[in-house]
Length: 141
Image 1: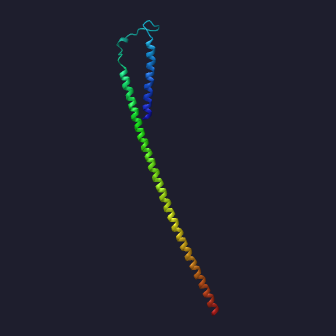
Image 2 (image 1 turned 90 degrees about the vertical axis):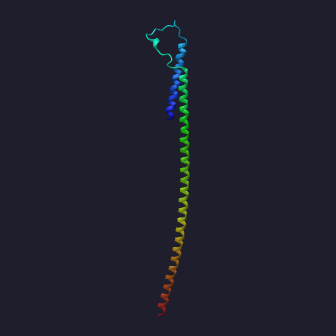
Image 3 (image 1 turned 135 degrees about the horizontal axis):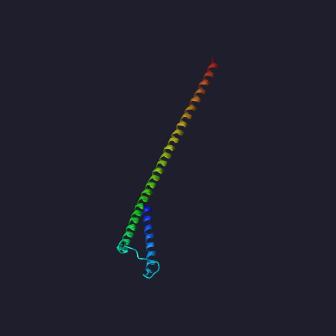
């Protein structure tokens, strides 16, 4: 949309520049200038086809449209920035939540491992004690 407005404004500026060049050249032309010929039907041409007021109105309309489109672009850009900011915030929140959950799970696993190791030590001690009792009973028999 902005490119279309830019194109219209550039085209309008080029048209005005060409008209200025033609006006400057026509300003110096006189009826006695060389290369001037009379053209059949020239008197029927409507010389009110383009007047400064219509040019001004057209240019103002182009500028108004361009400003409106720039404003819409700014609104879209702000909405996009807000969306990116919200997404970034959500991602950090999820990342922190996952890290806390993972840390809790690691702690649970560590506690479970310690309990299992403690239980293993007790069982090994009981096995050792039972083997000692078996040896003692074998000796006493």
